[in-house]
Every structure is written in structure tokens, then in C-alpha cells.
Image 1: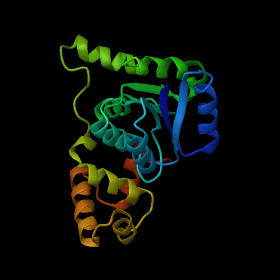
Image 2: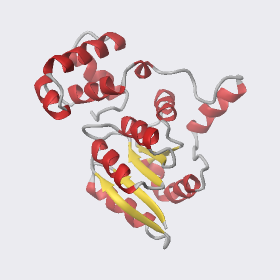
Image 3: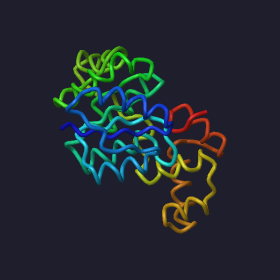
Length: 215
């Protein structure tokens, strides 16, 4: 039985995906998550073969959830599910460790082939994604282009950037992550410096552009 984790913050989307996937008699949606933090916890608990993860989720975005899942569960393949497609975003997805990338507009036609491919340990990239990967090979470099700006951030800094962009205060973040306010402020200052941002509105715009949060 192929175990699949679904992570999307919209109930109706998860229901639709689950109905599609469980048309296969040997496939089972073993867990469903509504945010990235829950997705990571459920992945550790259920150890799915494939995780279908929405890119833009509250508390912990799909990229950071993917990083944590792949680091701890290297046998779990991740399919990133998103409405957006850009070279910068594709680089982020590949760097996070996902081996599949699917646009939501293609879900009805491509979800089954995508999960099937990942279940066989084969990557699933189509369209612009394939072009970016191929371009890396043709130029004699790595399949994954150079690290984007966010790769300079630590995992904790990326987490705090998202929570700040979602409107949470330093005190709220400290309570959520079980840190001191001073530690949160230190991470916030470091992240702003690394990203060359000068204000919270700048950080919010950055988070929207990078699909860390939804506009």
C-alpha cells in the first residue's frame, strides 16, 4: 500500500486531491495537514512514501516543511503543489529537496502520473521546470542553479521571516517557538541584514514574491 501525506490549508482542495488519489486501490492517504508545521509532525509519525505539499501554507511554508521532511525522512519523496511557476521558485523547490513540482492548474491531468513517478523514485518535472534543469546540464553546471538569496538564511531565520510576514509580533513568535524575545529579535535582525531589507513592509513584500505567504 502506497502511503501518501496531503498538506494544503484548504479543506476542499485536500478533499479533491484525496478523491483523485484514492481511486487507486493500492494508494492510501494516510494523513492530512492544514499547515506546514503539522505536515512535518505527521510525516514523522506516518512516514509516508510520498508527500504532496502545498507551497504556501501558514506557520511553516511548503519549502521549509520539505527541507525538514527530506532531512529526517530521505525515503519520503515530496511533490510541491502550487499555483505559481517561476525560475526563482523552481530553484527554491529543487534546493529544498523536492523531486516533483506540479501546478494546481494541472492537477486533474497530472497528479496521478506525478505521484506514480515519485513512488518509483523517479523525478516528475514538466514544462518550465524541465527547461531549468536541462539548462543546468547543457551549461556543464549542476542541475540545480546557484543558491538563491534565501539559502543564506538558517532554518530558524526562514521560519521567523514567515511568521513576521504573517503579522505575528516578536512576543507571539517567541511563545510559538519556545524562544526568548531577545533570541527572536536576534534572528530577525540577522535575516533582515542577510536579505538586505530595511523594514517590515519590505519583508512582507519579499515573502509574497517568494511565495512564502499569500498576498
